[in-house]
Length: 196
Image (cartoon, rainbow, N blue to C red; front, top):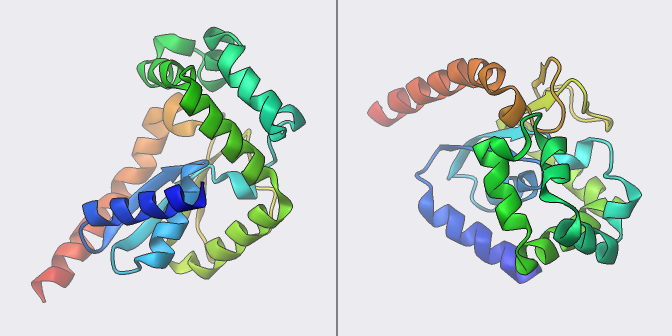
């Protein structure tokens, strides 16, 4: 699994222009932080949405790899989808995710990661990396899924009222309203730097 992570990060770096903004959610924050650490010239800014390692851990049943694998494969897609978005699978993003999740290989990989990210040393190392890269990072979290781990006070944290772990899915406009000036500022700064 570790080799796949490195390969994914190396391939992602090839797709990025220098000084890119990388936006990641939950488990994706693991890859985004590793990408920024390994390729600092490629990542000017990290916007992390609900980074799993600073929020409450998943329920115990998801931390046991065999059980979580079975849950992802056999629990009703509707039941899982309703936990992600009030519209369940009618939300296109959630519907697509549910279709992917019921593929055996996807369920297996997700359950492996759910187990791995629950390990205390994994959470500690990711939080340390977050603090190390803090000058490049902003965090967005939902009010109902707050940060429970101490992080650097220099890292800006934006809280989306009424949202849970998936604010970019459930509160699209609020996330858009926050990101627009952030990205506009970044784009204008990048243009000025490239003109020099």
